[in-house]
Image 1 (cartoon, rainbow, N blue to C red):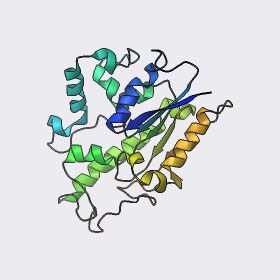
Image 2: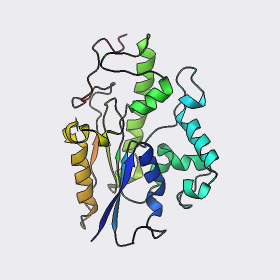
Image 3: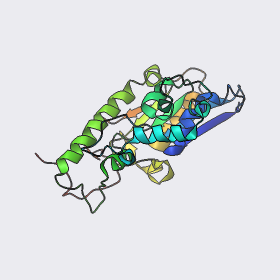
Image 4: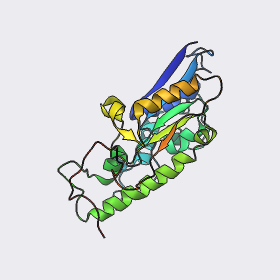
Length: 240
């Protein structure tokens, strides 16, 4: 039968997350079509602000609230009413929306998501630049968010049930499905492309094969995974 892979990366993945469950009930996708969500980097947590950076431009939850307010269309935001959270903005925010999805999905989410951190911290790490001094405060914030992300990903109900999959690195990156790393960068020996292929196979398997779960918990530090392809300056880091 027919198969549809529906998704996107970054903001596109958030949009796909919002609409995924509504596609077949609304008749946009025929009922007999097998459907899998491809969600690359839509997963952020409602975490405390970094230091005193409490303004909207540094807070992804506050940005989401403003966007939803400006849209003035709760029916779209709630995915045709399928999301019944009291705070409608949460229907577009990964921490709150993903656990509610009924349609199978394959989620890709770095524990040290570059976009989340650069919005929150207004600072970037590159092959030639480090976080501002004292660096430890930046790394502590990043580590705290990474630990919380990893823990919440592993207890997503769909992941526990084996009906959806997750792929999570400790690499300092974001939305890598549009770059060569999709086929080259490995987490626990597995590339994103290989994880997606396994998810597609599991979705089409009538015997109910479990979705892939590839979550790096081997090192627990910023960009520390053995497969991370972005190499940072050796002077960057926190030593206490």
